Image (cartoon, rainbow, N blue to C red):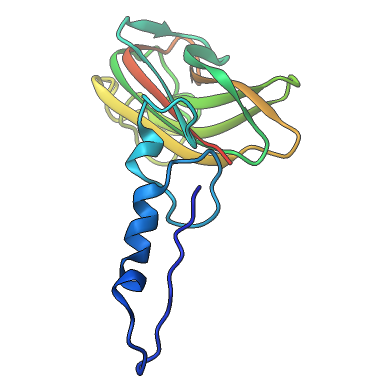
Length: 205
């Protein structure tokens, strides 16, 4: 990023017009560069899709096809694959939201049994996966303690679920994709994810 020089003046100094105009003159001649050198560096140009080399890269995936989740193993709902790989010490800002429509309550009385969950899987070129931005929701309203059955066995339908997290990529790691996953915590419970949005911002060095 380009820097703008600022001259400081003492109370007795009389600045010239050139000195006063210096920050604005330099600002007019600067271009957005690839690397960040300090705080408060972001400008509109950093997010402009017409700029070939940007400090920030944005990715997104929106799916409006209903998907059924009825497994206790993690099921991938949607993913974002990077066209420019994110590398160590860069920052990922991941946000997701879903609309859970129809739910089938097949049973279960413990906290684990009546939940369903989301998480974001961060895949790397080295094969190590990281998990961020989790979210856990209840299928039905229930009583306490956990040994008691649910007070209301009618499932909580049409619920918006969301999560977000900022995460710094560890040293020596290259991120290749980000995936939104879901599961139910007990079979035969079942949820339908009616639609989802997955967005990623890569804060580059």
